[in-house]
Structures are given as structure tokens and as C-alpha cells.
Image (cartoon, rainbow, N blue to C red):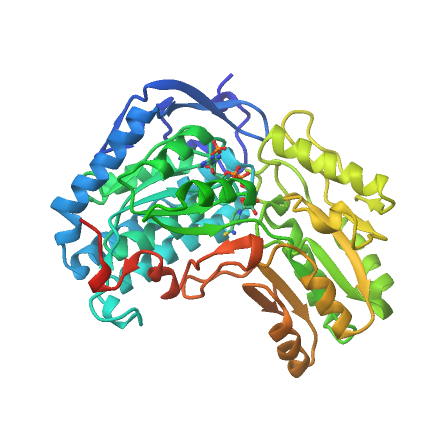
Length: 484
Ligand code: TAP
């Protein structure tokens, strides 16, 4: 049964005009892949959505060659102003097709439509508008006079924010004058392919953007291709490590955005109502499939019980279910594999002695689902306090003093994000200064803006995306340029 036969959801799939099969987008047009194609499914129903082409090594080579040709013959010769015009056009087309993109994203990824509609897709447009504005102002980015593009960028992205991660990668690369070959995750190729249609609609010169689908081996072939100048990867720390090893000794420039185990720290002088909302947003937004999720709650001992009670009350009101229902708060887990990992780590949490709690909720029979879950009595040494679960699971620990909060927050191999809740501004600043995290939110959580650089310390990777710092990853000073 196809998704079209699936009972029409409130946010109607009739908006979508999907093809039954998608090819690889190389050199400005779609073509068949030479490896066996695969099915992309809805994680909420396990039903087939479309058949997706898979790129062999020869297809990867064709995509990189197209990107190289486009770089040499057109894109590197355009003025920044002209590149900017194309980016503005893409941003406007994303806005025009916003509802369709949001439905496709929720269908393929499982995230609630109110998130894809109100967060993901508007941010995608914002990212293209923001970097369109930089294209003719690169001399003012603080990267030296007349900085030059690197050449061909290979970009590999994960499944948690498929279209937004694409925008984070493609917008700065094109603004800086590079051409790209991007590989979306195997479980969420759909919106990247709709984006390829937008690239065609925008009239981008052939080969400037290439989208190739496939599994991890396609990503491996792409990042190891000898004619690639720049690799940008977002995904797990283990794959990031493998890529860093394989690129060692080459001249390729590399940025890595990897995992996280963010601490959300609540002091006893925090505005409690806002803090409870921020904790929920920190870990249950996008089912917790968020690299910068506030997956560890550190709460001051004197208000621990009150915060846990308030949190349980609030979780009991969350609606878990159909991602295409605009009243849904928590959608489906992206894949059977990810669900198995969340289950396994949660079972380990219980076995290690933490207390597990979930609100009563009826989960759909088909698809991949996991109820919002909190753990109390979590020890700092336990797996659920250390490992990235990447699901709707919150580990709650307590602390007595600000120094203890900082020590616990920093007690992780990761260093991507943190949150601080307090009505005392100088405490917020003093604590923020001591946290080893690339992003620190104060009295809010999971807020994103294209002008803010985003990235991690330690095993969360290196390099920044967003802001003018995000351009640096795609530029070299004039003297050392090796683009052509
Ligand atoms: P990964 O398994 O690492 O996959 C990420 C991407 O890399 C996918 O497109 C994947 O293809 C591809 N890939 C797999 N093996 C590869 C290889 N050997 N060489 C090149 N590419 C390869 O991660 P995931 O499970 O999709 O995503 C979850 C992880 O991403 C979490 O750890 C999360 O924290 C992290 N993440 C970080 C950030 C930032 S900004 N720091 C943002 C989002 C997510 P397949 O899909 O075919 O496996």
C-alpha cells in the first residue's frame, strides 16, 4: 500500500505531488542510479513513500565531475552579487513551497507537522536569505581581503533535520563560491530531492548543486573522492572519527558537527514555569533527535522534587502520535534501528538503578514509537548520563552548588550545548563562562538563528556553521587558494 492510500491526515498529503521514483540529481537533471534502489518509508506507518536511486562509485564520480566542471566554467566566474541572486531565488521558492516541504519532511522523518511547518522550513528559508546577503560582502567577513572559494564541497548530513541540515551546508558553500555534492541520510532523502527540483526552478547553472542518495558507503565514496576540496559532515561521532582518519594527510578541509549530551541546568531562583517548558522543549522537541538536546537535566537539590512533579504533570499533556496531525507534540522515532537503540539504553538505565517514568499514552500499533520518558536517581557514571540516546529520554541529576553544576555539566566527552535557568543575570554569565559547550542558552533552549555560529568542543566536532564564522569553513585566504 502506498502512502496515498493512507487515511488522509489533517495536514493533507494532497498538497504533495511526489514522484513514485526519484533518481540522482547530477549536472542539473535527474538520472537513474547504477546501484540497487531502495524504498523510503514513513516511520509513523512503515508504509512505502517512494523508490529512491542509489549512487555507485561511478555515480559519485559523475557528480563530483559535474561539480568540478560547474565550478571551473561558471560558478567561480560569477560575481558575488550574481551568486546572491540565485540564493535569494532559492529562499523565495522554499517559502512558496513551504507547506509541501513541511508535509514531506514530517512524512519521511516522523517529526510533528507543527515543528516542520513552524521551525524547520522557515529556518531553511532564513538560512538561504542570510547567506544570500553575504555573497557580495565576503571581503567584510574578517577572513582577509578577497577570500577565495575552496572548489568542490562534499557534504554528508543526518536524518534528524534533513532539509535544515541541507540548508546549513549548501547556503554558505554556494555564497562563498563553491559547488556542492550533498548526500542526505538513507532514511530521509525526500526533501533533499524536492530541493533538487527547487534548484532546477531557480535556474541554477547545471552542476552547481548535485544531490546523490544512497547508504553510508555512498557517503564514504563521496568524502574520499580525490577531486573534492572540502568535506562537511554532520552525524555521529563514530563516523566523524572515521572520516577524520581517512582524510588525514590529504589537503581537504574538514568540518565535523557530531554528537552531544547537553546539560540543562536549573537553579533554585529560576522562573519555574518557563524552565519546565524549556526542559520539555530541550528534550522532547523532534523526539529528542537533536544533537544539542538538553538530554541531561541538572536541577538544584532544593527544587528537585517540585521540578520533577511539574515535569510529570506537563508530560501527561503531551500528545504523541500522527506526525501529520497539527495537534501532535511528539512524533515517530525515525527508524527501527534508532528505536532499538533508545530501548536498549533505557533498559540499561533501569538495570543500572535509575527510576523510569513515562506518562500513560496509547502508542499507534504500526510505526516506530517511544513514549516520552524521564529517569530520576541517575548516577553520573551510568550510561544514560553519559551516552547520547538521541531519543525522547531525559536523565535527571541534582546538584547543590554552582561549582558542582559546572563540574557535572562538563563531565562528558561532548561539548555542544548547555542551558542555564536562573533569574540572576550575573550567575548566568559566570556559569556560562565556565561551561565547555559551543552553544549556551540562558532561560531558553533549542533556539536557532542563521547569524549565530553553531558547533562544538571536544568529541562534538570542530568548525562552526552559521554566522560569518560559517563562511570561513568554505573560504581560503587569496594567497593559499587552491580552488581550480
Ligand atoms: P551517522 O550514522 O553518522 O550518519 C550521518 C550521515 O553519514 C548519513 O548520511 C550516513 O548515511 C552517512 N554515513 C554513514 N557512514 C558513513 C561513512 N563511513 N562515511 C561517510 N558517510 C557516512 O549519523 P546519524 O545516525 O544519521 O545521525 C545522528 C547523529 O548525528 C547523532 O550522533 C547526532 O548528534 C549527530 N548530529 C549532530 C549535529 C550537529 S550540528 N552537531 C546535528 C545533527 C545530528 P546513511 O544514512 O546511509 O547511514
